[in-house]
Image (tube, rainbow, N blue to C red):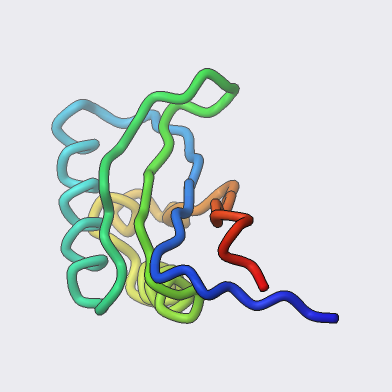
Amino acid sequence: MSKRCTNDNMYAIIYFNWSGSHKEFGEAMESLKRTASKFDGVDLVDILVPSSEWNYAALIKIKNFESFLKYIKKTREEPLTFFAKRGLEPPPKKLELLVDIEKLE
């Protein structure tokens, strides 16, 4: 039996490391937010500092996984300004999805 999520909202956490300046970090985060705003059902909630080996974690609220995949694909097809300048691949480097288990049927 396959499980289907009936929840209107899920959360994704994208973990990544950072080695640029504070100004460059702001530029990259604004680019990520602008890209997210182009997709219905994708909201970059905040950038957090996790208690793990990663420097930062982006918390993203999504209505469905398909919208999130489109967002990730877009950030990889059209490299964001900071990453493109340095010839680096943009995030994600590690991804977790959070879904309310009570909403699975």
